[in-house]
Length: 111
Length: 114
Image (cartoon, rainbow over all chains, first blue to last red; front, side, top):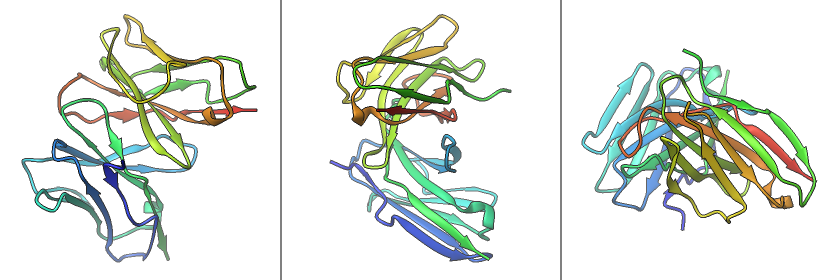
């Protein structure tokens, strides 16, 4: 049972435009959500997180939105840059260090 | 501050052998978690250690084990290797356990089982 789902395996966006990556979850016990970025042959790099008591968190070009009633979160990257091309994972946890990851979305930024 | 380090970075083993992977967390971090990444299953949680005690465990067979030392460094062992154990093994560290907190990942050890 996939508790965290990223339904889009890939996304292609033009440089300078907005990238929107989506993630759905099923476990209502999740209360902390994170986005990680991963380049090939490297470990995931932490991008941004959000607690379930918030519905939005912003850090520079990155904004994460959480809709608890829909069990949905999204990552917005504005403006998108070529260096943003990577695989993005959303992850969730429920008061433990056990992170449950989505399958990832490969983002490609086209010049 | 130095990040999470993992050794070795690459490893080739044959079926039936055993392997030990090492992880040094960020200085001051006491929680170390291990994950397996495969193309088919994505990133899956193996286990977490905090203060030399296993705090959480994922759904992996007993061939996968770990331990943590007093300096928070952790090792993961896989015995009787199978072809399906070929994967990227990632270690992540955080300050504490059992609280909402960000984990930081190392570069991983890529294991190939022939």
